[in-house]
Length: 169
Image (cartoon, rainbow, N blue to C red; front, side, top):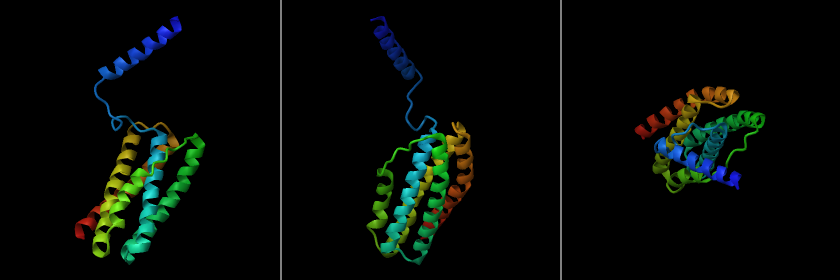
């Protein structure tokens, strides 16, 4: 009986402590290695989805960019897989993020497709860059932190390119 009371008291004190630290949302906490790996895999699925979308509606410009980004995603995934296996992380699979951003490009044609192709990329890049930046503030795995530091400049550059191209279209 004492054990049960101790467990209940520990739970209550933990809950009260969490409440007294202020309102915290999931975005406030530092992402874990698993969060980063899951996020990067979701971003890769998004890039692969854009490639599939350009096969049906894209012009040569967007097809070339989609092929390039899909190849980068494949290389990133292979390197990430080694890190994932080394640390034993099991990523969470969520298809909602990738499929939600693809709805707009798939439902448009011609010039509107090109514009929506770039527009769909911007929030995905923002989310991924933000995830890596938050992770690098308090990384929990040295190899993944090194990988994130290596990927971040390229992803930022690709985000700026998408924003510039979107502004031009």
